[in-house]
Length: 177
Image (cartoon, rainbow, N blue to C red):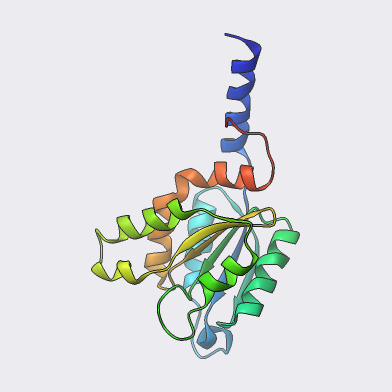
């Protein structure tokens, strides 16, 4: 085995064993106003911690593109390599999460949304209405998940295997490819 092949393997191990710092954003007019208790953020926090990730930042913001963008950028600047957003991915008039993220992204990762919708179709036919997505914003992998807590956690589980590599690439960490 050459040194080059050995070195590539070391990068793969580094990417999969890295400690992922997570930011969680609940996007909801009603939860941000205190009209109801946020359940999506806590559900994602529990899932992230079960995955061995460290939750560094949490926020509840209204369905407002500027507030979403400011929070994503703030979390990235604080060192969050993974930002999980729950809410605002439907087709309601206030559902602006995908547009907010697309306006500040460097690149979209369509496979994440495709997998989340395809796997969710096995659970509910309504998942075809979801606009969940993933993108690179600054040095973070941002994943926009459904607002329903069970849907957010399920969708996260469908793409969880690709997250360490995606975060490593977003942060410029050497990887196997």
